[in-house]
Amino acid sequence: MMPSPASQPAGKEAAPDAALARLGGAGALLAGALFLLSLMYVYGVLAQAGLDVEMFDDQARLLPWVAEHARAYTGLWWLTLLSTFALLPAPLALHDRLRHGAGGVSRVAAMAGVGGVIFGLAAPLVLAAASPVLAQGYMDASGQARDAVQVMGRMVGDLALHLRLGSDLLLGVWLALSGGLLLRLRQNTILGAWFLVTAVLAGVVIATKPLGVADLEPLLAPVQSLAYLGLGTALLRGLGTRGSGLSTPDGPGSHHHG
Picture: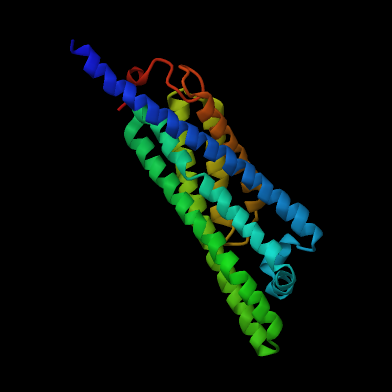
């Protein structure tokens, strides 16, 4: 009569796992789609309105444009905020799938991923709040006052850049550790390899962007988007099936690597 109570907790634990995987998978898919949408928004909608990506480094050109297109420009950062927030459950869902094979490493990866998402929410909030105010102040000012507003604009831009790079660093750690685990546990080698490629590219961007050596950040966004779309697809496909997606082929007890 003892096996029945023992098996019941196991059955109860399966439902939260499935729900978390469903939430994380849907969130990752939404994040990837919104990241791609934000790119189309920048290079499509905003470009047609006159925005040039080089203007981000030239406050004298950017601020007048923002003053004229404040809502459209702010919309970019709200879209970025939503895409980042949608990713929040994904690191936890992935950890839930990997913890049986390498709980400690997977836990660290999940913490880095969640931290990267939270860190990543700061930059678009700063830009959405400050940019329209600075732009209008620039248009109302003249002479040296305009120079002061430009300096403030550069400070806000630099703050947002470093917040974004900090987020990329933490997300890169999450992707690198999770990608390594996916390869080691042979659960999804294609996704694991793509995670590692994304992590390496994030590291290159973090190292080169502040120095102005090379701007590979526009390349990082679509690569990240594909990683999140792949993660979302894998999480959703692994629900309720053994040996597919991210589920362990032989059950949790098949891996004992420490």
